[in-house]
Every structure is written in structure tokens, then in C-alpha cells.
Length: 281
Image (cartoon, rainbow, N blue to C red; front, side, top):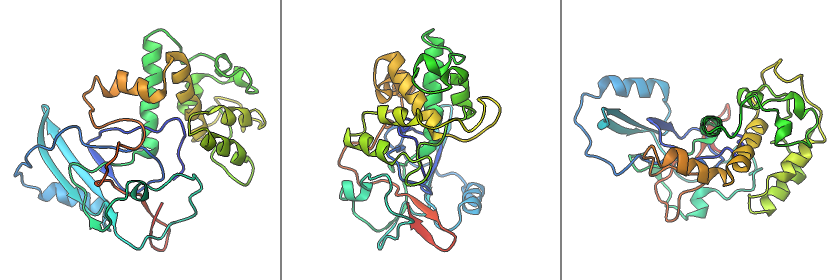
């Protein structure tokens, strides 16, 4: 799965699935695991197994009035060795099992498993923009040129277009063919994944795909720019803003941007079905 550079976050959720990977977006438990209730699981089990047959890793938690009502792990968070990857690691990011020297085997997820949210993290980036609008620091009707004056046609694109995937900007995560962001991404990685300006500079060289607001085109580029705008307007990194304004106030103590701090042993790896078999992503 291809992912946005600036919209990667870790987030707690009711259910998480280890069917996709390739990012540093993780989801951990909302707090220390509570004793597992003894509730009739039949109908819940059937729903999960019917929708995620084949061993896909799922961790389900149901809360009622703030108290844990049901929690159970299904499938596998790690299918064990040997690994077969769907393609080369185009992102150049070290796989978490290698990074943390994790034990490998056929392990089921549990209440402590950290999950990669990948593009589900876009909702949190959008929420950050809306919080800044609530603060009176920006408007979703602002033209993108207010923040990135060097991007051609930026005066025609609003922040709302970025939020709605209607900007017309080309997809940045394309390497080797048009629109080619290979060099820009290499510069980003060389900066320690902190300098997004090469992506913006490369965007200046490509025309819009369509007139902003006239078509829908799912765009990681839109959310890279939104993440940069959050940092620019708030004066702090996206992850810091998320922690202070979203994760902290909501008590999401195991939720943050990027990989969790070492040591890490309970993490769901990314898998996908390539049409023939299940492979690592």
C-alpha cells in the first residue's frame, strides 16, 4: 500500500486489521488490558471470521460506557517465516521486524498488539486542519497559494479541495515513470524524513490533472500538503500537534506518529493477497 509521507499517525481504534502495511502508522491499545469478559462470542466471532477469513490479523475491542465489554484477537499478526514480499521496498524504510529484531512465528494478535493504520491516518490530519480552523488560524476555504505560492495553479485550489481529494494535483508517490518523484523522495529520505520541501518543489513541474473541484481523485499528495500546513500554521511538527490536541486530550496513550519506542515485540506485520498467495508488503 502506498502511503502519504506527512499523514502517518498511530491511532487507537475499535478494530484493527493487519492486512496492509508499508508505513510507520501503528495502532496500540487504549491502555493496560482489562480482564477479558466472559460474554457469548458466537455472533461476534462469526462476523469477524466471515469478513476476514484466511487468517488475517484482527484485534477487536468493544467498549460500553467506557468499560471493556469484549476483547478478542483473530487470525495472525505474524504468519512466520519465510517471508515473500510483493515487490521491492520502494520506500527504503526498514521493516519493523528487522528494525526491532522481533521474534518471528505464527502469532495471533492480542490487546497489546500495535497496528499500522496506513492511510486511515488521513482522518487525523483532516481533524488537525479543522482544529486549526476552530482556533481561527486558517480556513478550509483558504487558497493553497497562501501556504505554497510556488505551486502553479495553487490559487485555484482550496484546503477543502485537498481534504476532499479534488485538487487535481498529481500523485507524488510514483517512482520511475511520469510523474517521477524519485529524486524528490531520495532527498526527503536523506533529510532523515524531515524535509518535505523536495516534494513541493517537484510538484511545481507537473500540470494539474483537472480543474480543481471538478473531479475526485484519491490523492496522497493532498494530505502531504495538509500535514505540512498543520506544521506551518501551528509552528510545531504534525506529530507534536496531534499529541497535544488529539491523542493526549482523548487519553490515547498508546497512539502517536511513527513507530513505537523500542523494544517492540507485539506488532502486526503487513500482508496482502497478490492474486495468487499472501505476501508481505
